[in-house]
Image (cartoon, rainbow, N blue to C red; front, side, top):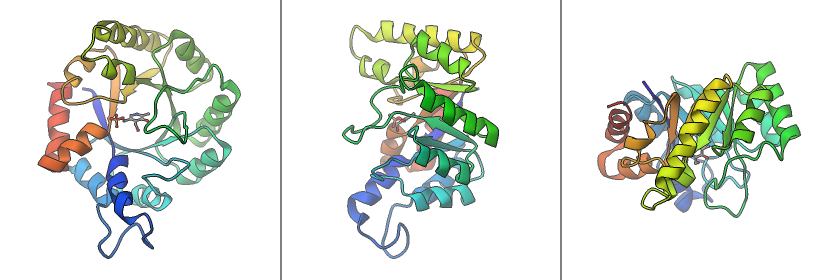
Amino acid sequence: MILLGVNIDHCATVRQARYRQAASTTGGAVEPDPVTLAVLAERAGADGITVHLREDRRHIQERDVWRLRETIATRLNFEMACTPAMVEFALKLKPESVCLVPENRTEVTTEGGLDIVGNRERVEAATDAMNAAGIVTSLFIDPDAAQIELGAQLGAPWIELHTGAYAEAYYSQRRAAELARLVAAAKLGVQSGLTVNAGHGINYVNVAEVRTIPHLHELNIGHSIISRALFTGIEEAVREMKARMNG
Ligand code: PXP
């Protein structure tokens, strides 16, 4: 069975659109609350909750992360840039896993995988620190052999394959080639001793094909689930995605 990590960042995006200047992230009329959403997602079968505390704090705030840490019953997967400040924060937070992602202030969302070949020292330092603290490190990387092989060498136990290029190519002729890249990357990941996750741009349509990628441990899905929840509520949105992932 493929596990589902629900990324709740965009619940906070909606709150921040109106309450960025509010004195607190909760209380009064401040809504929607990502922690409440996380609890409901868990109740519907989410296997973990994912958040990305971005440097510009555009959606999730530090207080959200601490409240999640105290509240959720599944696993907290903490996406973060590979910087000393975020490593220090994660060591205090102690999530079950961290996912190292690239971060660029001008991007609308995470646009590409982390280039661990080009950032080897920083990635290795962060991975070593997490390993020593008993926190699982996942590397969010493109489905590229050099990145996967180096990821395994650096001692990270997990990778998350970036499915964004595949999702973008879904309605084009490039789709089969992008899927083949993901399949080859997943096989190489497992051969290299890694646990293979995937995420970005996965939705209720393309998940039917994404789930055919071999060896998948977990999918991290945000935008499509939060969008669907506007119509069905989060519990039904999570239940439906889980049903489509595992058939
Ligand atoms: N995985 C990672 C590492 C991400 O950065 C994101 C986007 O924040 C996701 C998964 C979820 O992507 P989406 O919102 O497109 O489902």
